[in-house]
Length: 256
Image 1 (tube, rainbow, N blue to C red):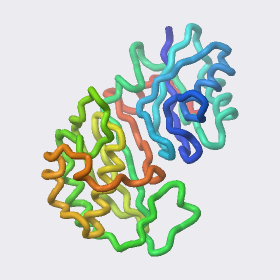
Image 2: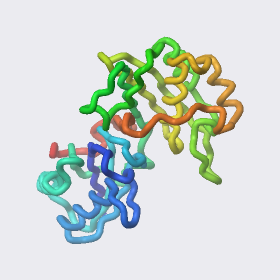
Image 3: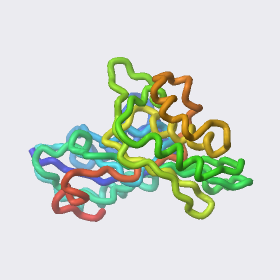
Image 4: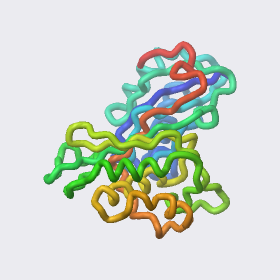
């Protein structure tokens, strides 16, 4: 059966996360319902990342299989008519045999936006965390560096019995973009609430509430209570999913 890839962006403000759930509105549920309407068969999709309620995506990747070939340009147009305005299908294409949006991914990149202004901005409340206190970006950067490499992130993850919390972080950095402080982190995979927990710790380092050099001790403790409270979901964006063959893994893709 042919495998198809969708590159998807969405505003997660009004969704109960990406993953399908009964009786609540989710991004995956909306995409699957639209695919079933268009293709006239039930379709189960696989997402590269399971974003939580209120979390957004610029570069989510979704894969699915169907028995019969699909006209990708028409599918892209139809999906966007049905899913707008909260969900956009950026590209549609047939993927290589064996492609799986989740298991074929080499790494995921997330960004988190902190609005560092004395007064909140109502127009950006759904896409950033407003922190009115002055923040020391150098302290935040020193904390971020401490997360690089392979560690047990039990202190920074929501518990999932039977699942490993060891992860390898490939990049972890802060940069200033006007009045936004933007955290970018890349890892092969993340455990639940890991990025938001790291951001919460870094912001408290920027507030002067924790020592930015204490990351190693907090990691070693493997104690969820040792980390700071997690950052709220609205500042988090699944920015990019990377595959070994790069952005054209999907082969001949159509902009939609």
